Length: 217
Image (cartoon, rainbow, N blue to C red; front, side):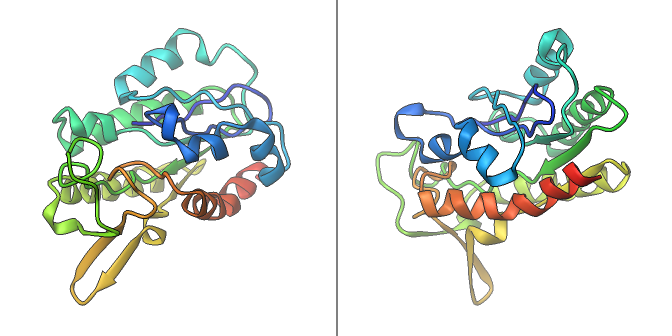
Protein backbone atom coordinates (compact mmCIF):
# COMPACT_ATOMS: atom_id res chain seq x y z
CA UNK A 1 0.00 0.00 0.00
CA UNK A 2 1.84 3.10 1.14
CA UNK A 3 5.14 3.93 2.71
CA UNK A 4 6.33 7.27 3.97
CA UNK A 5 9.66 8.74 3.09
CA UNK A 6 11.10 12.25 2.88
CA UNK A 7 14.46 13.87 2.47
CA UNK A 8 14.40 17.60 3.16
CA UNK A 9 15.31 19.42 6.36
CA UNK A 10 13.07 19.89 8.25
CA UNK A 11 10.75 17.36 6.66
CA UNK A 12 7.83 15.08 7.32
CA UNK A 13 7.45 11.86 5.43
CA UNK A 14 4.09 11.38 3.85
CA UNK A 15 2.10 8.68 2.03
CA UNK A 16 1.40 7.87 -1.57
CA UNK A 17 -1.72 5.96 -2.52
CA UNK A 18 -1.90 2.90 -4.70
CA UNK A 19 -3.77 4.25 -7.75
CA UNK A 20 -3.23 7.85 -8.78
CA UNK A 21 -6.26 8.12 -11.00
CA UNK A 22 -8.76 8.06 -8.12
CA UNK A 23 -6.68 9.08 -5.14
CA UNK A 24 -8.08 11.95 -3.10
CA UNK A 25 -5.55 11.36 -0.33
CA UNK A 26 -2.75 11.70 -2.84
CA UNK A 27 -4.07 15.12 -3.82
CA UNK A 28 -4.06 16.18 -0.18
CA UNK A 29 -0.85 14.52 0.98
CA UNK A 30 1.46 14.49 -2.02
CA UNK A 31 1.19 18.22 -2.54
CA UNK A 32 4.14 19.67 -0.67
CA UNK A 33 2.46 23.05 -0.49
CA UNK A 34 -0.47 21.58 1.44
CA UNK A 35 1.85 19.87 3.90
CA UNK A 36 3.79 23.06 4.43
CA UNK A 37 0.52 24.87 5.13
CA UNK A 38 -0.51 22.28 7.73
CA UNK A 39 2.83 21.91 9.49
CA UNK A 40 4.58 25.19 8.79
CA UNK A 41 7.81 23.58 7.58
CA UNK A 42 9.38 22.50 4.31
CA UNK A 43 8.15 19.02 3.43
CA UNK A 44 8.80 16.38 0.84
CA UNK A 45 6.79 13.30 -0.07
CA UNK A 46 8.44 10.16 -1.40
CA UNK A 47 5.95 7.37 -0.88
CA UNK A 48 5.90 4.44 -3.31
CA UNK A 49 2.72 2.54 -4.09
CA UNK A 50 2.74 -1.07 -2.97
CA UNK A 51 5.96 -0.77 -0.99
CA UNK A 52 6.79 -3.43 1.60
CA UNK A 53 8.89 -3.21 4.74
CA UNK A 54 11.80 -4.86 2.95
CA UNK A 55 11.39 -2.68 -0.13
CA UNK A 56 11.44 0.47 1.96
CA UNK A 57 14.45 -0.71 3.94
CA UNK A 58 16.31 -1.35 0.69
CA UNK A 59 15.60 2.21 -0.45
CA UNK A 60 16.73 3.64 2.87
CA UNK A 61 19.96 1.70 2.57
CA UNK A 62 20.53 2.67 -1.07
CA UNK A 63 20.30 6.41 -1.39
CA UNK A 64 17.11 7.65 0.24
CA UNK A 65 19.05 8.83 3.29
CA UNK A 66 21.88 10.55 1.42
CA UNK A 67 20.39 14.00 2.02
CA UNK A 68 20.59 15.95 5.30
CA UNK A 69 18.39 14.39 8.00
CA UNK A 70 14.82 15.59 8.50
CA UNK A 71 13.63 16.84 11.86
CA UNK A 72 10.62 14.51 11.74
CA UNK A 73 10.14 11.34 9.73
CA UNK A 74 6.69 9.78 9.59
CA UNK A 75 6.34 6.14 8.69
CA UNK A 76 3.43 4.01 7.54
CA UNK A 77 4.32 0.69 5.97
CA UNK A 78 3.28 -2.95 6.30
CA UNK A 79 -0.15 -3.45 4.80
CA UNK A 80 1.35 -4.68 1.52
CA UNK A 81 3.30 -7.28 3.49
CA UNK A 82 0.01 -8.35 5.05
CA UNK A 83 -1.55 -8.82 1.62
CA UNK A 84 1.40 -11.04 0.70
CA UNK A 85 0.68 -13.31 3.67
CA UNK A 86 3.53 -12.14 5.90
CA UNK A 87 2.89 -12.90 9.59
CA UNK A 88 2.14 -9.88 11.81
CA UNK A 89 5.21 -10.49 13.98
CA UNK A 90 7.44 -10.52 10.89
CA UNK A 91 5.81 -7.31 9.66
CA UNK A 92 6.52 -5.65 13.01
CA UNK A 93 10.12 -6.83 12.79
CA UNK A 94 10.38 -5.33 9.31
CA UNK A 95 8.90 -2.03 10.49
CA UNK A 96 11.34 -1.94 13.39
CA UNK A 97 14.25 -2.37 10.99
CA UNK A 98 13.04 0.71 9.10
CA UNK A 99 12.57 2.67 12.32
CA UNK A 100 16.07 1.76 13.48
CA UNK A 101 17.47 2.82 10.12
CA UNK A 102 15.64 6.16 10.19
CA UNK A 103 16.96 6.86 13.67
CA UNK A 104 20.52 6.54 12.36
CA UNK A 105 19.87 9.39 9.92
CA UNK A 106 20.75 11.85 12.66
CA UNK A 107 20.81 12.12 16.46
CA UNK A 108 17.85 14.53 16.50
CA UNK A 109 15.55 12.74 14.06
CA UNK A 110 12.11 12.06 15.54
CA UNK A 111 10.06 9.23 14.04
CA UNK A 112 6.25 9.33 14.06
CA UNK A 113 5.06 5.79 13.44
CA UNK A 114 1.51 5.33 12.19
CA UNK A 115 -0.77 2.37 12.79
CA UNK A 116 -1.77 0.37 9.75
CA UNK A 117 -5.12 1.49 8.39
CA UNK A 118 -8.09 -0.87 8.65
CA UNK A 119 -9.00 -2.63 5.42
CA UNK A 120 -11.87 -4.76 4.11
CA UNK A 121 -10.91 -5.02 0.44
CA UNK A 122 -11.21 -8.80 0.64
CA UNK A 123 -14.93 -8.31 1.33
CA UNK A 124 -15.79 -5.55 -1.15
CA UNK A 125 -14.28 -2.70 -3.12
CA UNK A 126 -10.91 -2.76 -4.81
CA UNK A 127 -10.63 -6.43 -5.77
CA UNK A 128 -14.34 -7.25 -5.86
CA UNK A 129 -16.99 -6.64 -8.49
CA UNK A 130 -19.42 -5.25 -5.93
CA UNK A 131 -18.97 -1.79 -4.45
CA UNK A 132 -18.69 -1.40 -0.70
CA UNK A 133 -21.80 -0.29 1.17
CA UNK A 134 -21.36 2.82 3.30
CA UNK A 135 -20.46 0.67 6.30
CA UNK A 136 -18.78 -2.76 6.34
CA UNK A 137 -18.69 -5.11 9.31
CA UNK A 138 -14.97 -5.48 9.93
CA UNK A 139 -15.40 -8.91 11.51
CA UNK A 140 -16.11 -10.23 8.00
CA UNK A 141 -12.63 -9.30 6.79
CA UNK A 142 -9.60 -11.56 7.14
CA UNK A 143 -7.45 -8.47 7.61
CA UNK A 144 -9.05 -7.12 10.79
CA UNK A 145 -7.29 -9.34 13.35
CA UNK A 146 -3.85 -9.23 11.68
CA UNK A 147 -4.03 -5.44 11.36
CA UNK A 148 -4.89 -5.17 15.05
CA UNK A 149 -2.03 -7.53 15.95
CA UNK A 150 0.48 -5.56 13.91
CA UNK A 151 -0.67 -2.29 15.46
CA UNK A 152 -0.33 -3.66 18.99
CA UNK A 153 3.23 -4.72 18.18
CA UNK A 154 4.02 -1.33 16.65
CA UNK A 155 2.78 0.44 19.77
CA UNK A 156 5.08 -1.74 21.85
CA UNK A 157 7.93 -1.04 19.45
CA UNK A 158 7.50 2.72 19.77
CA UNK A 159 7.45 2.49 23.56
CA UNK A 160 11.01 1.16 23.49
CA UNK A 161 12.40 4.18 21.62
CA UNK A 162 12.46 7.68 23.17
CA UNK A 163 12.52 9.29 19.71
CA UNK A 164 9.59 7.30 18.32
CA UNK A 165 5.91 8.21 18.74
CA UNK A 166 3.11 5.81 17.80
CA UNK A 167 -0.07 7.34 16.38
CA UNK A 168 -3.27 5.39 15.70
CA UNK A 169 -5.91 7.39 13.83
CA UNK A 170 -8.18 4.45 13.05
CA UNK A 171 -10.97 5.38 15.46
CA UNK A 172 -11.71 8.30 13.12
CA UNK A 173 -12.57 5.88 10.34
CA UNK A 174 -14.63 3.25 12.17
CA UNK A 175 -18.09 3.11 13.74
CA UNK A 176 -19.23 1.07 16.75
CA UNK A 177 -22.66 -0.55 16.66
CA UNK A 178 -23.25 -2.62 19.74
CA UNK A 179 -20.40 -5.11 19.89
CA UNK A 180 -19.50 -4.78 16.20
CA UNK A 181 -17.09 -2.38 14.51
CA UNK A 182 -17.77 -1.10 11.01
CA UNK A 183 -15.38 0.57 8.58
CA UNK A 184 -16.68 3.83 7.15
CA UNK A 185 -16.37 3.09 3.45
CA UNK A 186 -17.49 6.56 2.51
CA UNK A 187 -13.88 7.28 3.45
CA UNK A 188 -12.35 3.95 2.39
CA UNK A 189 -14.32 3.63 -0.85
CA UNK A 190 -12.20 0.76 -2.19
CA UNK A 191 -11.98 -0.94 1.19
CA UNK A 192 -8.34 -0.01 1.85
CA UNK A 193 -7.44 3.57 0.86
CA UNK A 194 -8.64 6.95 2.08
CA UNK A 195 -10.49 8.22 -0.99
CA UNK A 196 -12.59 10.94 0.60
CA UNK A 197 -11.47 14.53 1.11
CA UNK A 198 -13.06 14.85 4.56
CA UNK A 199 -11.36 11.59 5.59
CA UNK A 200 -8.03 12.89 4.35
CA UNK A 201 -8.50 16.10 6.32
CA UNK A 202 -9.38 14.07 9.41
CA UNK A 203 -6.14 12.10 9.01
CA UNK A 204 -4.16 15.33 8.74
CA UNK A 205 -5.85 16.62 11.90
CA UNK A 206 -4.94 13.40 13.68
CA UNK A 207 -1.25 13.57 12.82
CA UNK A 208 -0.81 17.32 13.20
CA UNK A 209 -0.12 17.41 16.96
CA UNK A 210 2.39 14.52 17.12
CA UNK A 211 4.28 15.82 14.09
CA UNK A 212 4.44 19.35 15.53
CA UNK A 213 5.60 17.88 18.85
CA UNK A 214 8.38 16.12 16.99
CA UNK A 215 9.37 19.33 15.26
CA UNK A 216 9.58 21.06 18.62
CA UNK A 217 11.61 18.32 20.32
